[in-house]
Amino acid sequence: NAGVTQTPKFQVLKTGQSMTLQCAQDMNHNSMYWYRQDPGMGLRLIYYSASEGTTDKGEVPNGYNVSRLNKREFSLRLESAAPSQTSVYFCASRRVSNEKLFFGSGTQLSVL
Amino acid sequence: SQQGEEDPQALSIQEGENATMNCSYKTSINNLQWYRQNSGRGLVHLILIRSNEREKHSGRLRVTLDTSKKSSSLLITASRAADTASYFCALYNDYKLSFGAGTTVTVRA
Image (cartoon, rainbow over all chains, first blue to last red):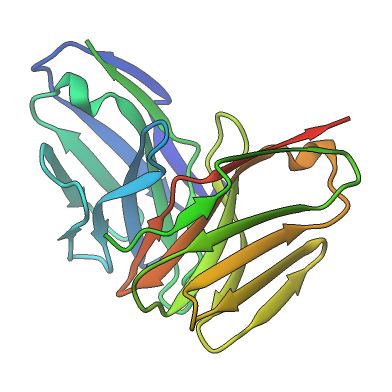
């Protein structure tokens, strides 16, 4: 039982490049989330998907897009990366009946 | 923003001592949760307290919630070196969790 798996673990991009961060969970959870963590700012919610087929903006959605591919997978796309998107990105999931989040181990992204 | 604010930002204690950190917030909440993050890792859920609860225990953890003061505290008793981590409070409302900036706890041997 792997839990929440994020790929890649590390990525370096040049300004303007695009990439997709992948997240998959094997716990049959309905809801999935993408957060970014910056020093001194805690975690900020980018997008979330309350259930398969739905996505909603969080606190800091600008510059990002998401796809809830199926119940297991929730991807985050940066269409044109900017240095301000340098951060650690975490994916999380939870059951409908339980408000507790399970987190992946994160993707460290640097945009030069 | 409905983030909680943790206090203190950092805490250094001797092994065996207790560690207390606080979380204040401004909005109404459904529940409040505490998470731990070890360096370079993802967050791990510690404990959840609902808005109609005042105190919960889990092993060496004790959480209190005062909705009239909009504040919560996390107490770790008899701390160990393995408790060295960052601790975050998170406010739950409308399917979403909002996190504070965290308290960094260092337990000295």
